[in-house]
Length: 380
Image 1 (spheres, rainbow, N blue to C red):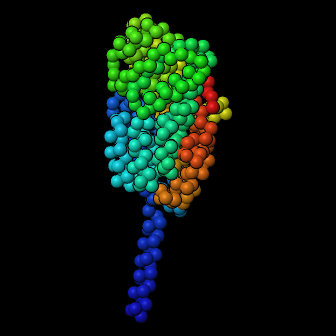
Image 2 (cartoon, one colour):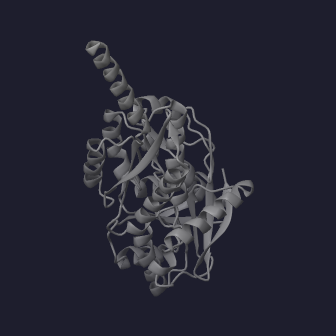
Image 3 (cartoon, rainbow, N blue to C red):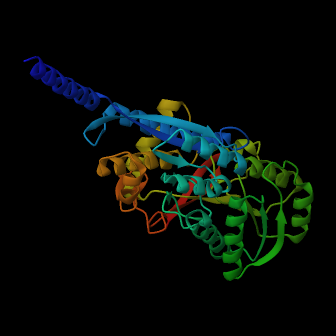
């Protein structure tokens, strides 16, 4: 009798333990890395807020993964836009055993960090990385939310010649992986379309004085100046162009194409002088959902979307959707699902090709008028 009671108690205890375990939330850690300090910090905060917004919505919804309610936690790191700090941040996320990573902000940090995530088998979805090399390292863990520099720089190079009718161009880059990459693609496309490269110059991503570079460019009288780099440098460069009387059109990629650019240029951005593009964009059918996201974002954080928070938001949602479909948050089970997923996000349908690049990636062309960014159109 005693023996039977003991066995029954053990079975009951075991059942209780199993029941309690099933009732416990499944903690899912989502890593995010961006420059939260330094000149690109406003872009890094924008990206992080997109992830934060998605996680709060997912927790409020009570998402089920493998029969358990998931509780999502944001694990955030600052890479300051520095490759060494970027790999250190990546290792921290691996050590924290995150289930997936949204990041990094820029190519120079994302490319070396990708190997660390790949070695750990953790999916990495880059929301704003455009250097083609990111997804061409052969890792099965790397995914990209936007079109790459080959498309972005190439589109801008052709636009300079075919639409702006530029015959001569000057090209400057900041020597980062991103800046060099997009400038090289612009130069190649502009030359192929018939433009002459009047000047090829270099600076760095912390420079503030461009008098020497711009004086030399002014004497060449290019129709267009293209800058491969970020808005923190492009702003002062535009201000000094105005001071030196350089009236060339100014072009740049997504690092330049921010809502902050006129402020960084101290208001010295004549209407229509700047033409830039961001990797990403939505078609007319997607516009209501995208505009709702922007309104909700501003209400929540008290600030406008800079560029890529919609893509970090969607990256977080698509990562979790893959977990739901896999019935597990374990990276090894999530990765095969992520590679085949098709998800309707606020930025459009998200699906990846065999390298992890976004399928049918869009670009949005912009200019600035009265200190505000104004859309020129979406191209694919």
